[in-house]
Length: 250
Image (cartoon, rainbow, N blue to C red; front, side):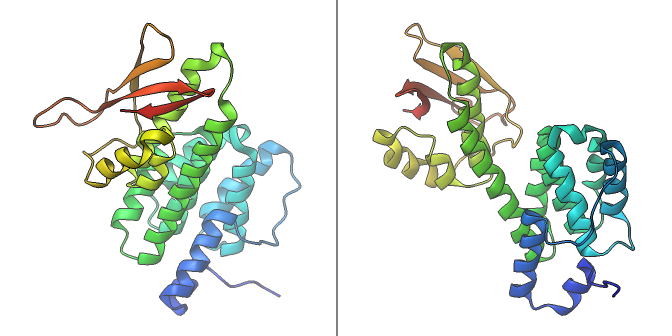
């Protein structure tokens, strides 16, 4: 039996609540497609690239193509040019999937920027919600990496950078609850209340400068590509190593 379900057909016939659920499922889980790939890796990637943007490809086939590239991760680097180009695709579903797949393959910050634009500006509330959910998923992955990447003394700078960038990214995505996870517990409630009052515009591709203090367990973090404030000091924060992890502190 020929499959005919396509994203544009979903948009046309499903009520908003059901449509939102369907789109989020396809964007995050990849859906349940019947399409299978048995070609060697290079041909598999080429096939996925064709499948993900073909106008006559069904929704399940597109979802599977994106999912396979996500599973390949950095091994699918040859797909990066096509994924980058697809960030400007007229189809919101393809833009969202391409952004998340690009993040999984090469962690390019332009993927975060694309998702944020869709979350804030897409005409369809279902796609705005889908982009928001994908950004939350990325936030969660960054949080898991923070836990996984904490290592010994040789890794202190790398670990601090992971935490600092995850904190800034969460704030840029207006996710105060996620950002609060990186604040030391004794000061979390106090700092969170301050953040809830409002934060300056922050880049979703943070570039930071780290200066360790003499004791080796504290550091100053400056955000180099933040918008310059009309008054006051540029955005920055202090961090402290406690119980083997780096935390944001006052």
